[in-house]
Image (cartoon, rainbow, N blue to C red; front, side, top):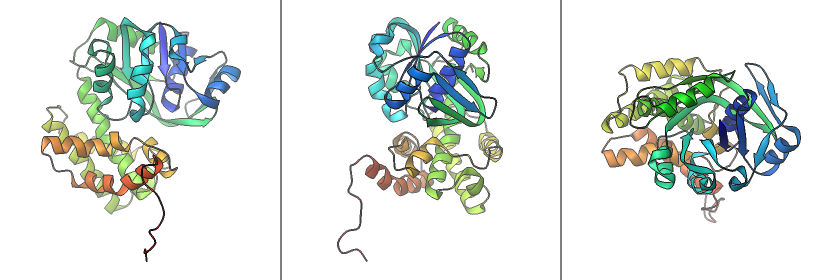
Length: 319
């Protein structure tokens, strides 16, 4: 199967690398020093589950040069999906399958509007990974897993064909839930609160889960996402908050979310697609989300500064 991995960061680099290792025809769409290093030296992945490398890597910064593909795995940041959806069009046949792996709950809709709803599955992944140096990925925690499915629910031949491809790859697990929308929202109930609380406290998960006050903030944030999901007709189980908190308790204490890392490094982040998305969708649904409003308001100045839309520093009369 010919697979384009659009974005070769922590997510795309790991899952694309595993597919290439399994013998699939993988082309990475990347840029800058990371692209140059992959072309020259291959892709190296250091992993808590065992290191591996792909010595011969097909990679480009020009989607048209990649040619037509069977599948596009969209692994860019959530705020880059719009640009990626336009750039990927030269790779798409009428039956090309597009799978978003972003944090958040809006990427599939955004892609469907740009490339056609008939092409787009819903998807998610679970992993803690990042680019540690050009051409190198660090998988720091969480058993890698990918899930995808038809947005309307139920199995389909193309979903099962893609599942068989991932089942051949080592170092990951794959799921094709009947209700992929519920699965995406269940991950969102985890990632948006953990990202928001982690970024606001500026602490790794082991620190803020251990303090009663910040743990309560995390739990209340999860309950807000649950209320929002139900208001939108998403079927999440009654014990989802308790199960998610237990999952958080099992994470390595040094774990941080990608949004949190970007914010702490002064980079543009997925704030609008995680915390901001909860606030925006809740207003439309008439759901109260005071914790997310606090987190969003606290983090928004830094986000705007990172994007160059506000001027930092003290005003002349500040005391």
